[in-house]
Amino acid sequence: MPKWLKDAIFYEIYPQSFYDSNGDGIGDINGIIEKLDYVKQLGCNAIWLNPVYDSPFKDAGYDVRNYRKVAPRYGTNEDLVRLINTVHKKRMHIILDLVPGHTSDTHPWFKQAKQAKKNNFSNRYIFTDNVWNAPSEYRLMCGLCERDGNYMVNYFSSQPALNYGFAEVTHPEWQLPMDHPDCLATRKALKEIMRFWLDQGADGFRVDMADSLVKNDDTKEPTATIWADIRQMMDEEYPDAALVSEWCNPQIAVNKAGFHSDFYLDHIGNGYNTLMRGGSWGDKAFFNKNGEGNIKAFVDEYLPAYLATKDNGYISFITCNHDTPRMTAYLDEDAIKIAYATIFTLPGVPFLFYGDEIGMRYLPDLTSVEGGYSRTGSRSPMQWGKGKNFGFSECDKTYIPVDPDKNAPTVEKQRRKKGSIYKAVKGIIKLRKKHPELGADGDFEVIYAEENSFPFVYRRGKYVIFVNPLDHLTDVRFDYEVKQEVYKIGEYVQSWEKMTLSPQSFVIVEI
Ligand code: NOJ
Image 1: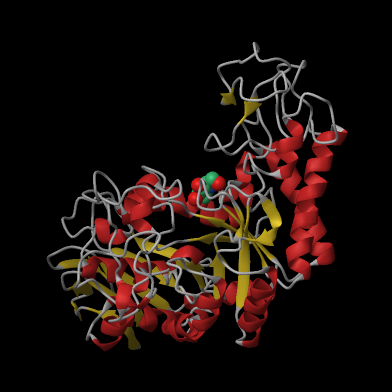
Image 2 (image 1 turned 180 degrees about the horizontal axis):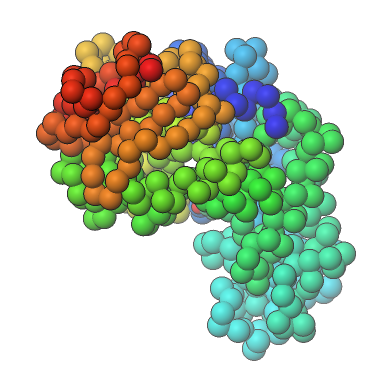
């Protein structure tokens, strides 16, 4: 386990929307370098950078054309190395995005693979043995290439799946087992890409669709064996580098695949979703002040996962990410502050999505840009201040339009505003850093989390945390002696062995 990870508080930077330093309407690496102090001042000490590699951008860069080359629109490889070095000088860390499950259909490997004549890359992707063979249980692209066969895709049609083999070979005429030399060659190529960026100083990777490598893999354990092998290479060669998975199954991702942390994603109906979003536009979210949420749904899923994995790695809570509607679509400002305060006082390694700290809006009406579709609304340019395009870019037309609301929040305004989301985020991060018990490794115990009941109370070492999302008072039995108040949003009164909490409040006391 890399030591730095346990104190890490990540900031996710979506490069195309962060800061445009050369006025072409799109964010770039030099822009990120200029804004590193902003990230640091917020209290974040680590960065997750979404893909910056050469790509035709049919899926915002998750369709990689060259894993080893920075997309010219973001700068050069030298710029990325300079970013990495500057991050390190500021005593921060940076992980890059690794997309192991698929490439762009314009990647040179794929250009070779789709040729009729057999070559070294014929098995780098998954093709059926002839175009008339297209079993419907697989997502296949049919009749598009010279080669007589259909190829499997991993996500959009432009993202052919790389071939790591099949856990169960059900069609031996075209499916290869995981230990086939050509599948092992794909794995080797992936390791080489990882080494390439780790050798330039990257502190690890956020791994895209980490569970998607092996096909016909219902248990996901065969896929986990590949990662366990990769983790072994990391332990031997890059022991300080971190691996964070997009998997959302920590029992497998952490315990079996060897990821240091696994994202708790916004999947409809899961614990994270019921906490933050839930129902139709947040009407059943625990943090919604209407009281229709159910904390038990979160705890029933989270607690077993936490207990099963806490000795091996972490679960990563996110405020949001580039695939998920921002919380502003569902919750009011007070609810958001309480939600963030909760995220930053739970165990594991937290991630803050750019702009969430100022309460940027989710923009549901934006036309899709670069394969974003409904996700485009969470990817609009960062709002820095008063200038043109809220200070994001000097260009007349930004690649995704900025928030059309002139009164949209900006860093400048949020820094001045009393009780702003920005100030709340900064405050809670500072607190987490000051008290290791509130951090990644501190103990976690649920004190009160009952079916459709409020508040939610949990303990982190000597600290007890009360969360009341409701628009009215609530109370809970509490007979500990309070040594001191540590933090509060809203008010509380302790009397008659009861803790009474004001509407939309979040309180930490030391016992
Ligand atoms: C998950 C990424 O977060 C998402 O943005 C992307 O479209 C898919 N994986 C496919 O790579």
